[in-house]
Length: 330
Length: 204
Image 1 (cartoon, rainbow over the protein chains, first blue to last red):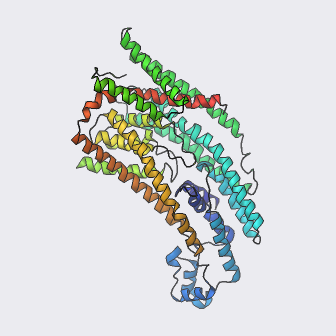
Image 2: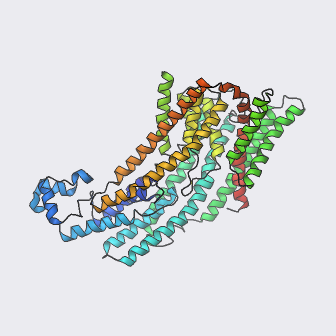
Image 3: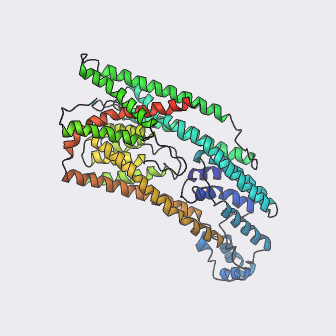
């Protein structure tokens, strides 16, 4: 069940919508746990219908199968005939409770997708406890509160780890691999040297491999840990020292950034080393610094990178299209 | 004819890779740095594909997809960039800015897609209340829909660039575009540097 939830958690963002965000993906990932907890091993078999209606459907050969796959109900109709189809009160109650559990987990849900495993595991455990006892409104309310609280906490942690640090680090890994492999074509657009296809692909693939390791690890660990400590409002939050981990990632990311920027300036200097000192060389070495400065000022004043691109394009069009200056590239 | 066939295959591949960006997996296979060289290899311009891809990725590094934020789409940008160069035959610099524009504009399409999916919540609830649970069906529908929309968008945008190339003399902009394009690596590196510098300053 946990492994099935883990696999389904890769679709947590499928069906993302503005009204309830990840609700469909969450309910889909939780289904194996709900089915196990409420003893519903196959798609619903028309629990909303009355026993007499169930009987008549059975005589028609199982209309429910068209609605939710081959239901146990339709199967039973073939094996035992309609007379044996009337489900017990307990069966009806289980399917009704399963439906209501599924419905309450279709409410608003949003968290960091890679950290969703923690909440999935936790909710699976809470639903298991809810299913084991009689209907308890207070327990249902508490479960919903724990789910929302954990979703917010893990979103804050996950966004900082994955979107804020690991994702940009995949770009850094790609650039480092390319620099070490001797491919500088990404920095000098006039460069024509053709590196091997392997080196070009190795850069981005290395980044994906590093990132995916963390992503898959935390998805699985989250489901497992969440299920183990399910019900606790701090479940999984103490799995590790998140602040320290985030801090270490920041230091590593900054070191990589610094290394890449310094390497880029060194490469630029080497690329222009054949030129004699003069305005042309000053322009070639000064322009990159100007771009960094303009981007920094724009960023500080709350402008997006598109503003800077617009500015650069406007200046370029003015100089090389309107004034028709001699073509120039860095 | 072969160019159109390659564009169709590239658009479909972009549609498939796009699923990784939000809907399924999220292994970062949808990174422009990977999509660029991949589609470049398919269209015979792997070097330009790699260059376009990494630069688009560096530029888009400023955007974080938290909450309901719809950032510019990297797959669309890289795919349109590569096709604008390989199919429409425009200079890599112009192809790059065309890709950036296509990726940015796709945010509006994505916004509409997400809004349209909101309406399905009521239908899903009604189904479950009626004893039908078909979440797998809705999930598959969302995946197919997103993939198809991206494929059609990439192909249409690239075809529009081909048409524009036939009507207007786009090469007159090449010197200006080349100059701006040569500054893009530095703009991207600036984004990369200040992203982590800010984090250090904020102390995690």
